[in-house]
Length: 172
Ligand SMILES: [Cu+2]
Image 1 (cartoon, protein in one colour):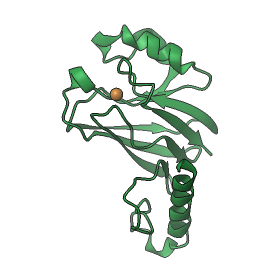
Image 2 (image 1 turned 135 degrees about the horizontal axis):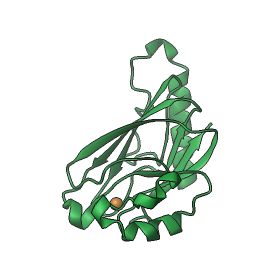
Image 3 (image 1 turned 90 degrees about the vertical axis):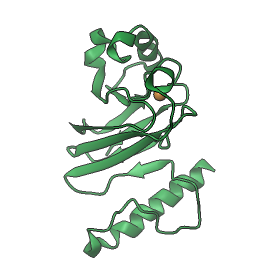
């Protein structure tokens, strides 16, 4: 199933790439509307800026588990909490970890960082970028420069969430 979704997303991107004359059209729009499921992968359109939207819900889930950008792009990432639960019960953030950082270790350290929205103050070097912690109905946006080519982990660092709320951030 996941493979199908990935292929679908790639097909949508290819379709968009072939229609460069219509650059104002949103390229993340699915080329077909036959499926009601959201593609699990999002690939930023080529250019200087990669615009990414990732949704978190009340069921402790991100809607995207793979994000692809190009090296050197400016990444504009919006985290949207589409649920209703308050921040204290079901808060979400987006934390992009530096290469080689152990996500499980990071998540463990984050449990003790409640006073700083679950961002461990002493682990700044492990973080490439992160949003603030938000509750249901809220949105937050960050902007950062895509790091060097490679694959990076991202997670929600709210205690217990990273088991489900995680993904790969791929820089090509
Ligand atoms: Cu979360």
